[in-house]
Image (cartoon, rainbow, N blue to C red):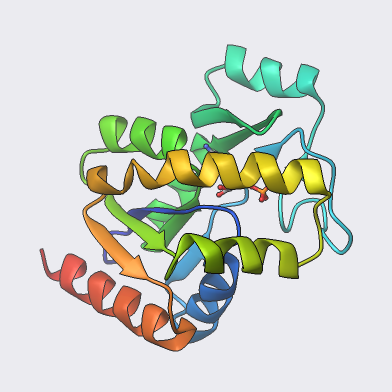
Length: 187
Ligand code: 5GP
């Protein structure tokens, strides 16, 4: 059995990382997306256990106390965390395990698991990012403003990631990531 790889996969809100991820999952069955825990309320269409485990702050804090998270962070007033055991089980099975996480969590994983692959998705421009964020229509004005502010902060972390992938064209971004995985699995 081949050994899996842990992939830190980061991009700010509205950059299109969910769309890219969906295509990656369709293209390569060795790719798995880790399901995070969050205290955020589900958006319409989001399913508990599929998109996230939607849990209370109390339950989140219990997992923190039990050292159950590989990483966790607060993002725009909500908590998000990656369940370590679930990730390691998928890695043992030989999967590329993608952690779709924000920058502070990404930095924690890079520190703890120095053999991880880190990929940062960038937008063609800030204007395009705002257009996409507004276009999806899932957030109110205050949340959009918070997420745009946070996006500008997050772009400062691009330099800590091994790979940057521009999402100008989704299919090109997907191909670029598949190439990165190919290259990294030879190392
Ligand atoms: P959203 O609320 O849009 O689903 O996610 C907000 C941000 O939290 C996104 O940047 C997303 O990648 C990030 N995120 C999702 N799950 C986790 C996690 O487990 N840990 C960390 N650190 N960030 C996460």
